Length: 286
Image 1 (cartoon, rainbow, N blue to C red):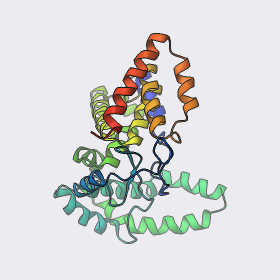
Image 2: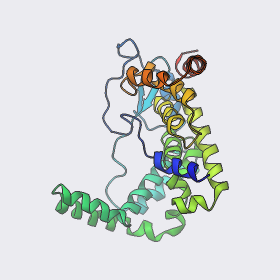
Image 3: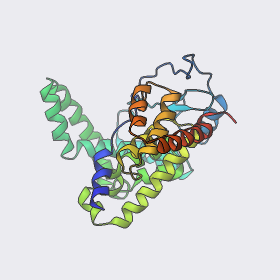
């Protein structure tokens, strides 16, 4: 079990290429031509408050990527911002619940030891003064939220993921420490780890079947290194082949070939069969 814990924590935070960069590139289909947006899917997800408006980037007839900007919240009191989001989240707005999580996480960053790490990083590149000004402003804005313990200490990430926020579902799956706490805490509560793994697998599988390419990449990585699922070279090759087929800037064909060369003939057949099945489910318009 210790190996599983180590895999979970060592492979978290491996981002899908281009994920959450705030930079929107022209997406392409496998023939290199710009894809036609799946407007119906985008409109449905936005109407259901599962993705932010304008974040849907098509990558084929069904496949897509969700790209959020780096902006978390407007300047000003963080608690006031969160309180108006809570009203929306209670009405079923998953985006609002995820935005609360992002706000709380930002405040936690600037009121914990992480701030010292960021300060040292800023100092190393000559931006210490600018960082200190920003840190002072964030501390002042976050003060009232930090003191509101019932809000500040609630598990907003799990809530947002359960409500269907696509960004929250991926963050939940890729950031076990946000759900389980430290590695020591995880080791002491294997039942909670099992619950997290089950939920994470469900979230990534659901997103990938809808065509979310970043979730497909997450599963390719998980099957390669272990964590959310046990490492499986056959399924790693299958998911990697699908991702590369949708957009080779995520996983280059040469990388897929290298993975497949490590398989025997029987495993290769299984990988190709699984790849076709995954692709038909995720990325072919029915």
